[in-house]
Structures are given as C-alpha cells and as structure tokens.
Amino acid sequence: MIASEMHRLRNALRSLDIQTTVVLVLCALLMIVTFKFGSRTFFLEHIAPSGGPLQAWGWWFFIQGITGFVIPVLVLVIGFRNSFRKVGLGLGDWKLGLIILSMYVPVVIIGTWIFSDARAFQLQYPHFRGAIDSWPIFMIYHGYFLMYWLGWEYLWRGFVLFGTHHTFGIHAIFVSALPYALLHLDKPTSELFLSLVGGIILGALVWRCRSFWIAIPIHAVQMLAIDFWSSLRLRTGASGIGLDAIRIALSGI
Image (cartoon, rainbow, N blue to C red; front, side):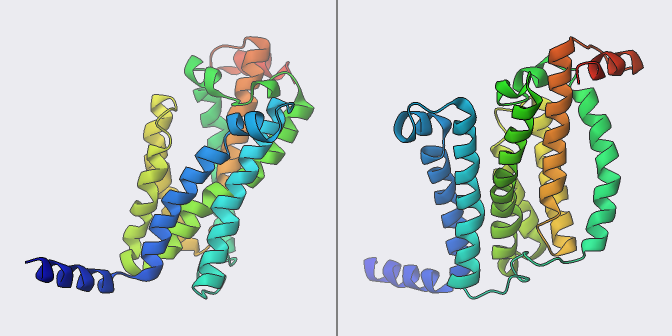
C-alpha cells in the first residue's frame, strides 16, 4: 500500500505545472515576509528605533514594492523566461485603459465623498494620521504610497493573474481576487464587500487590457480621494454630503 501511495504521489507531483505552483506558493511566502519584516513595528523596533512614523510607513511601502513587484518580476521574467508583455508589463490596450480611467475618476471622487461621511471611514483614513493636518506630509505620504501600489497591484493583478492564467484561464481573475479580499478584513464593512467585487472587476479590466499598469492609477486615485475627503472632514467638522458640506470641507484646504 505504501509503495502504491508513493507511486500516486510521484505522478501527482509530475502533473503539477511548475510556474503555477511556484507563483501560488511564493505569493503566500512573500505576504508572510511583508507582514513580518515590512511592518512599521518591525521598522521602529529593529531597523530605526529613533525613526518617525512617516519613515515607518515609507519602510512598509518600500518592502511591499520589493516583495510584490521586484521579486515577482524577476521570477517570471528571468526564472521562467517570460516576456514582459506576457506577464502584464506591456502597455496592452492602453487606449481602453485611459478611457475607463477617465470615466472612473469622477465616479470615485463622488463615491469617496459620500463614504467619507461615515465615522468608520474617518477613523480609518488616512491610515497615517500625521497626514491629516499637513498637506506637505500628505503629499509625501501619498508619494510613498506609489511604491506600495506598484507592489500590491502587481502581486495580485500581475504575478498571480498572469503567472497562472495558462493553468486557470479566465478563472485566474477569481483566484487573484479571493486572497485580495481577505486582506481587507480589518476595513469598514462596506469596503470589505466592495473589495471582493472591486478585485474581480479590476482583475477583469487588467485581463482585458493585457496590462497591469491600469490598476495602479485606479487604486491610487481611490486612496487619494478618500484620504483627501476624510482629512478635510476631520479638519473642518463637515458633515453630510450636500453642497453646504462640500463648501465647509473645502474651506480646510
């Protein structure tokens, strides 16, 4: 019986697609590394005990960029000899991407204004509270955030999506969306549900455009808008979603 089971195990291992297996396992390992060694707590305790909170946020974003973009790209392009275009790093259908982005920006500005009226969002955003009262710090923080988006988006909409699509086909969209949604468990309830829907839609958009680049401005604009509105509301005490609330909020610029 043992010999039979070993034979079945060897056959099962031979049937595995190496790239798909490496991508899925490495993705989990990279997330462990990010949360363990990329955390702000790790930075302040082991890297720069005298560092400030903004530097700690920068460390986290930098590590996410390395573990989510640099390492995955090296694995797919050098390790498995894929072309940049094949792993989502080409321009793809950039015209379609720009059209969708131009349609999305007004919607997200209005939507985040409405969501920012909820206390749960004001308690959550901006994540770095030092960005609330200083626009220069606000901009530095969001400048750091670009490195984070590069790693965060490529990990799911590049590494997992394009790294496994030859095995899962279009279902790779859902494979990449599920862990992405679970990583939003600590977010407000409405955002948690939207993360699953948004992850599927964004994955489908990247799949259609054949390029992950469109995911960065879409997510960056969304975060910038919610942080902007939440900061203004916290500065001015603006409440509600009508024109008077907008006028009061904008007085805090």
